[in-house]
Image 1 (cartoon, rainbow, N blue to C red):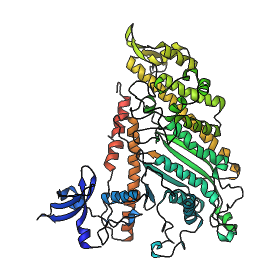
Image 2 (image 1 turned 90 degrees about the horizontal axis):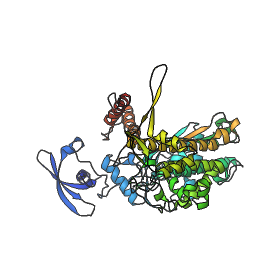
Image 3 (image 1 turned 180 degrees about the vertical axis):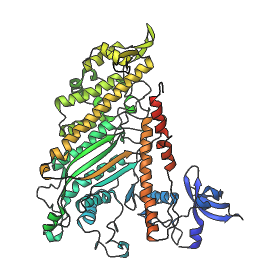
Image 4 (image 1 turned 90 degrees about the vertical axis):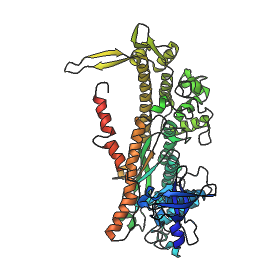
Length: 601
């Protein structure tokens, strides 16, 4: 590398763009400031004076350039000569500009959402290439012979472009060959493409068993399945179809349109894909180098559902998709569920779009290129695959209607008691009472009074009236709890229809199912109004950031030091102080817990 280029080509901080490339023109006498020529995005250059103490070790971060002074772009950022924040950002930027959304960092894949379809990126040929190279063949040995494939015998990824398929393929091989449970973490900010990535990984894992590239010594054609009962199309398997169809169901009830993403997951999920893994000894006796590993079922755990979205959302956003899908259903279907839906639109219900400042992001909004009416049909079909039809479907949708109708109740001051409240729109209350099958007076008492139980052995209970604002909060809390419990019931029903223990034909013969876990969690969030849910979400992400730091940076440094290999300083952000602020002895969680037990806290 040219000394002149490498020492003068740097990055400087910029308030608008974060970092900009620059060339050092000169340093002052005591090396405290530098005169640089900065290249702005428009292509023009301007001179600036920068203070070196604003930078790590009082040194400007170097650009990664070749002998000609051109920026180097690496598929694996571990190969970057200089590894720091601007180098990482510009490497990702250049690959994204070249329609290369995937970049590797060791065993980690970074995906930059291209926000467009890239032809051939997920083709059958590409999918099978990664399976052949990473699963069925013993590493990448012999796959290529030139210098670019050096180390292929040690690194099966050598010579392969970064792709999410390598993550799923290596996880599959780790389970099948190493007989070790696997976990895949998918995280990122809203709009990064987490939901789509999880679907891509699940579909790929489900299809690996049907590509079945077989070793030549088995005497079978290369892409013929090892077992006769495995279909080339994974959806031909009933259980696999249910597993894959669980995604649109969870999206319908747990995803919403936000300002950054039309199909944003508003909950976290951990999906355990269960596999029937062949015993390695038996596989070796049959002449197989890779034991069979058949997708047998799945089990899903969900957490941190954004319940606050049920009762309110920003004007440019929407609440959960299922509300709009239900309102876009055919009139005869709506009449069968509840006559109050007849002729109803998004403006008919406050929680969805009518009043309360929620606005309406548009009943005609297309989600993934499809209308709410089309999505309704997809949701009903997916519900049918897990047995939610007829009366079960009607009951589930009526619970959604109860949530909608609760939002239409209005509360005012009781003319006979300033400390009490009443429901002022009797017609909406009557509709809700009819829908729930409960007397209107019972609903009124439940929402406008609270019950207090005194301590002691002979506990006494008494009711206290609520003022209008508190009664409205009580109504909203009731609506959120109904929706959350409906969501939890749906997840349990999905698990009953997909778990291997209850649905796999050979479950009785399997001592323990192999597991590939998929953790899908939304990334850091900062809204105009942030609630406890945002604190929990961001806390979880801080913990994940800490794990990423330990895995990528700290562990590498420790390994180099243990091996006695010289390694220059690598700068990275340590969020230990942030975590102490949240979870420390006097952190936010401790303070909140203390407030919860204090009277009027």
